[in-house]
Image (cartoon, rainbow, N blue to C red; front, side, top):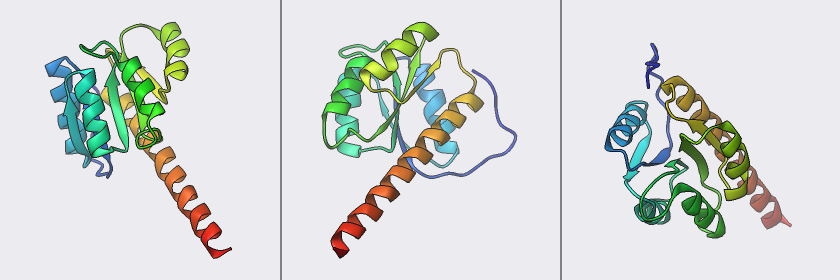
Length: 150
């Protein structure tokens, strides 16, 4: 995992990083915090669900192979919960493109990235997903305001 960017771009938003590998969890969390994100951490699927429900992050970077509940199960539960259904989910996997192409939409992941990955690619995917979330929230607010005026 390399790809240190020359420019330090500051951004905002909250991200839950869920991975049972302490090294990946620490590297990703520190990198995202350095970029200006508020970062929460989870080391297994049960903890990821609890953190997602209590913190309601804008995005979750979710490992697939975790103890107690795997990432696919976590994603499916998040999509079924009204409070968490709109959180963007970026899945980290080592299962290959064909499996990701099949499973990501099936379980509700918005995007995936294979391990090992480049940080620049991870950050680009996060930025893309967060811009979708911000756009969706703004559109919902505008629709609610329009309906309130009627």
